[in-house]
Image 1 (spheres, rainbow, N blue to C red):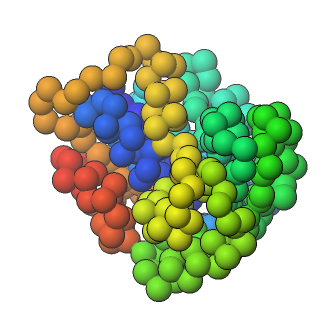
Image 2 (image 1 turned 90 degrees about the vertical axis):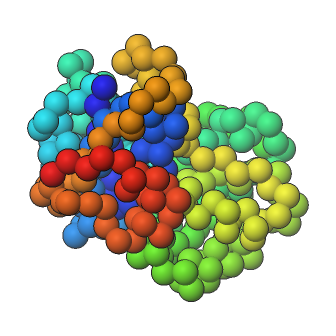
Length: 257
């Protein structure tokens, strides 16, 4: 099977690694838009156009499913992508894990980009799935950019600033941007006692459900990884991706060019 993933940058690594854990034999096509990153401040029309370009590049070689591994692109582009590719190609979006977090905890913080924090989309998720929990929206300016650049000092500064805005003793912390899952360990250390909720594992499980495939332990060599940057096939993942365990694991897989 072949699974494509679309994001502005390396935030797609978390979902890609989750798919690889669920199905080690799956071929992965990672399509991103480093020249246009970040997508958060862009208009809905611009995000949609960029996500559609990445999706078409990923789907060019044939896919069994396409993951929109970006919260911003899911908000703005998911209907357009589904209209363009479904029913022939299932398209799976990424939604912050507000529902499971609020089901298990009475106090929840949502870390997200400034563009997403306070948005109608996020407020809708809270209204629909907040389950009466006390939920605090925490903007994280610069964190996605710092993760994308693998800038340790900038990540530390952004995480520290967001932690200062997070209520003490919060029970759950929702990672509302896929980039944040790459530094989950640093976020956990900054907000001790909070249970972190990402989206990657749920997205991987949903992909397998949509295509009727069961999780399976690796029985042979891992599937191949194809990297597409700005619509062009690349020889390997960007250097910044190799700063994270998810990127290193994928870099060890056979590459296609």
